[in-house]
Image (spheres, rainbow, N blue to C red):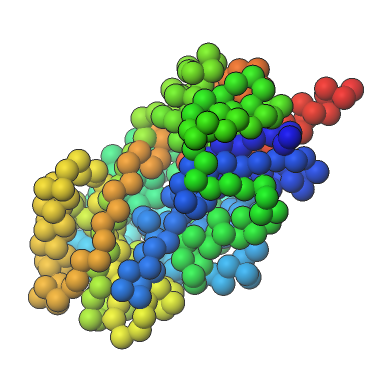
Length: 425
């Protein structure tokens, strides 16, 4: 009988399982789908590697450094900075610390003073220990940028689409703490993807576990005080159960168990995104950079050419284009209209070459990130225990995304290990 059953084979569940396994705890991870790692999955279509959504690894992340072997992942990095579409042309925005002489190009988006403000902001977010950043006062990003003195032009042209790419929040309502964290990570490291696709990250975590510790195609129907029941009728006994599922499934299982659903409901209110993939005869941009919509014309908020970052993402001889829209179509008709609108916008950017692009696939990722506005992300205020022997492990508690999932999995394992020590004392 396993000591711990983990329900959900995403990044948080895999990390929790790995920490427990390394501590000598017998664990069984159950994943309902056919593979672990959702949403960090990669499909192959016509020789192209399509990540299920736009995902990057921030190499400066302490959680990622702790858990991942970067060399084995064979990372390919984006160039620092971005290409911003503004007033009918593309303008390059660079990290003013890494490329100070390129600042004049950035200043074309706003005032020359914006470059100095960007340097000051960079210095502020990289100063002191990382833990201190989360103890600072928080306001919305919009309010923080006003305090910093950035011009309205620079905020509208750069920061709105930039935060849309980072947090799916073009409205700038995200907590300044979250924003500062991402800026610090980008200043101290790189945004990168594995050459083999984003699915290489959960695959690496999976390889750290004995095969008998993981079962896919194992959907949990309900949870009892002494284990779980699968949809096929099988019962698995366990002393402790960890829920590492999405909030809706977590709430369903907790409610059936008679546990505390209030803490789970605090995870809702998330942002979604739609990712469109196209095969193009030629790359529309040569730089391995993120492209931002600084005009607000929509629907595409940000775009990249993965094959310019990692040539391994394509079969050679053509380019892969990834375009992200901050919307969630609810029907095939809405999805088709969104693809058509994106094509029209990108034709305005890149000209008639877009008519030669082949639409490969659309991924609609619903409720991808939690509400990260001020006061929402306080892991200490959300109890991990939601019932006797029942622990919730959710990346939403830590702000969502890869960093949040890695941190949540570690924290859940630490809670279980501390409890085991206390029970033996």
